[in-house]
Length: 269
Image: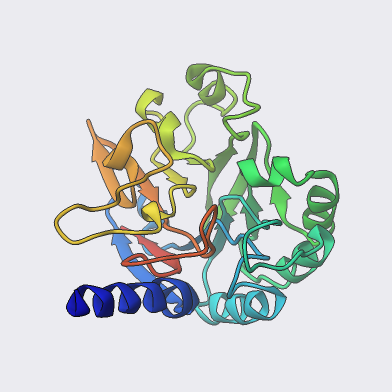
């Protein structure tokens, strides 16, 4: 019983106080067979689930995170939604306009592109949307934007959150022009199961990697109808590519174990 009590206490301390505050910069080479040669070496930062307002991740931590991202000198920054959270135990209430104002400090030569997540809808998106767009962030809601890079162009299609999405996956992809390299940015990864081969890469967040991953078990709870199938990292199915980041903040319970906060630097190969 004494050993069990010690292990339980150690888990609680790590999960509540240590791991949620420990930021990891994850750098990966991502091999995409259909990538145009001009885009080889392009560096893309993917950030999701900031949940500013959760324990350990307030405005001061957000400022430090933005400095770390800018120090990576990415070519393009993609934001996959859930920018704030209010009402989490031990958290603090943060105004959406303040979060948006700080995110406007992100810097990348090809710009910053984002979508909204489910929590953004719950907290009211008006102030957040206006603040992000005023700060120069291209916020896509079932919309496409063209990016010019290295003498070629590619398209980013940003999808609406699944709770309000009205189009089918095929109808979503039909929003993008034919014949141009296509990247899909979405908050929840589950739509990937129904996308066809048109996107070079789909990028998502939302799962938090389960927030808790246990030895030999994995993540007991995953916010996906596919369980651990789209939990995190680079997933390839039938030649289609998905990348899911485990994100920064916490949701529901303010804990992380085996899944530290991360942002991802993807070098396209």
